[in-house]
Every structure is written in C-alpha cells, then in structure tokens.
Length: 395
Ligand SMILES: O=C(O)[C@H]1O[C@H](OP(=O)(O)OP(=O)(O)OC[C@H]2O[C@@H](n3ccc(=O)[nH]c3=O)[C@H](O)[C@@H]2O)[C@H](O)[C@@H](O)[C@@H]1O
Image 1: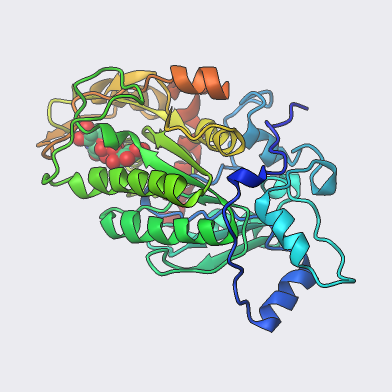
Image 2: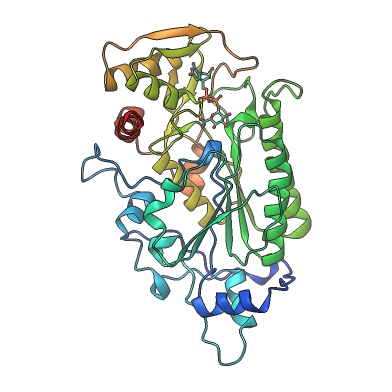
C-alpha cells in the first residue's frame, strides 16, 4: 500500500519554543492513562466544512473506485498498519514523551488520522455541522468530539491542527478563531494548516488563477467579510510562521461538494441537488454564465492530508480544474437526477465572481496531487446521500 509522505521528527531549528500548559493534575493523568490526545484534527466543521469529513456512504460508487485515494484508504481502514508500526513523530510528540514522569510508559507513536492509529479530536460548535456526521466514529476510543467555538481560546495538547472553521459571516472566526488556533499551535508546537479559499482571488482578472495572483477583492463589498477574513487569516498564518516559527501550511480550497453537506447551505451544488430531489426548480442566479470549478470532497481530503504531511508551506490551490457555467451544472444535475427538472432565474448577488478555475500546476509538481473524480462521477454519490436525507424529512 502506498504510504503517505511520512513526516520524520521535526528538526530542532523549525521547532517553536514550547510553553507547557499548566494542565490540571486530573486531566494530565487522564491523558497519560488513556494514551490519547496525541494528535488532533481540529475540525471545526461549520458551513463550508460540514462535509469535509470524508464520506463512508457512497452507494453509487463502483467497488474499484474511487481509486486508491487517502480518503478511500482511510474509509477502508487500510492506512498502513496504524499504531506504532507506521510512524509519524512530530515536535509535540517528542516533547510530550520528554515530559512523562519516570516509570510512565511512552505513548504510542503518532500517525495520521484514526485509521492509521492516531487520536483525533474534532472541535465543532455545531452551528451548521451535525453530530450524525461523526456517528460512525463515536465508539472509537481514539476519537473525541468537543463542542466549542474557536473564537474562544481552547487548550489542547496536539501535534497537528487542521483549521477548517468558517461559518457564513465569518470575520470573527477568521480573525479571532485563526489567532486562537495559531496561538495553540505556537504553544504546543503543533503544525498548523489553514484552509483558505479561492475567494481570496475575489472577482479574478487572471484566469485560471495561480497562487501568485494577488486577487481582485472589493474591501467594502457584501462578501468582503469572507474574502478579506480569509486574506487576513493567511496574513496571520504567515506572520506566526515568520515571527514565531510556527510550522504552517495554507490551502486555497475551490468549490467543493459531496455527501454530508448541509441540505440547505445555499451553495450551488447542494441547492441544485436538493431542489431537484424535492421537485422544485433550480435557482440560477444572474444569467447562469458565471463559472466555477467543482471538486469532490475525497479529492480535497487527499490534498489537505498530503499538504499537511509535506514540507511545503504553500499557498496551494486545491480544486478541480473542470470548469462549468451554472447552466452547465444545472444540466449535469438534470441528467443525473431528473430529465424533467427546470431552472428558474433570480437576480445575482453583488460582486459574485464571474469565473473561477484553479491552476493546480504548483500542487501537481510539488505535492504530486491532483483531483481524480470528475463532476459526473462525484455527483451521483452526493445525490444518493441527499436522497436518503430528503426521504427522511418526509417520514
Ligand atoms: O462551495 C464552496 O466551496 C465555495 O462556496 C462559496 O463560493 P461561491 O463560489 O460563491 O459558491 P456558491 O455559493 O456555491 O455559488 C457559486 C455560483 O453559483 C451561483 N448560485 C448559487 C446558489 C444557487 O442556488 N444558484 C446559483 O446560481 C452563485 O451566484 C455563484 O455564481 C464560498 O465563498 C467559497 O469559499 C467556497 O469555496
């Protein structure tokens, strides 16, 4: 089985100073006794990320696909042995083992994500995420779910932080939440991955967008709290890297879809699919000629893990270069679900980007990552999940 790009023990010069947490005695002994809390996925799964936990229910997929993606390997539980046999030791792991009192057994070595033997903590305020998304992990002793909003500080001993948090009006989350997570990363020596967005390019004047493009953003527009919030989050991330030595990674995520998305999150793919399944017309904003590039969620999960484990800071575009107008997307949804589906035009919102398509040559050459699942392959998998949930609504 193909192994991920394993991360050896971090070199000292890259390791930030650790100011150890004054953990309450009971908590500390709990952690040591259970040998947990060795790695964190700080998945604060709000609006844009409630579907980012890879799906386990993909009934329309063939048994041989979707290829051998990381997400698929994780789903199958075949992540390279797990536990101490496949090892990722990071700065905090080394530091944690140094802190153990004499006679206390060392914790298991750390590998990435549950199926590979790691402990995973998900932090979510459940504004838009759902507990059901984690139901299949709740019995796992290495999985922990904490209800918490990252705009408030949280103290955890962790090795890696995937900072996915971002609700619909997200300036506070992007600024306070990112500061809190960067502060945590600095304090415990964790590697920090920011999930930024293609929206940092605004209504782009360059097409397709390369990471070197600085963007075209209206700083006082109706969607600027998202665009500028993520741009600020990128700035903070780089400042903590340069100023405090935090190891950081930045992903710029392009439109992503898949099972477990909120049925009514307002995004175009979930809207079109849910509307068609409910026999409502698909609402096309504007003339429908604006373009987006749609990435299936497991490709994104592959990209995020690959980036986290790599030696590269980024930013990296993580998206599928397959570009569609909204009318073309509506046509694909129609062909997939219901040939009699209709569209209905509504006025568009201000500053809506006219076109968006990632140039992923940087991710291809440095991370050896590229998406594998086309819209036509991915959409049916999302449809079956939505279909079940919409049928449940009716019961
Ligand atoms: O889904 C995502 O991943 C992205 O969602 C939003 O970006 P946006 O491109 O505005 O995504 P949508 O809200 O899905 O809109 C895409 C296009 O579809 C149109 N749209 C949306 C919804 C709808 O019902 N009908 C419709 O025509 C919008 O006007 C827009 O032109 C976020 O701002 C991005 O950060 C995020 O990456």
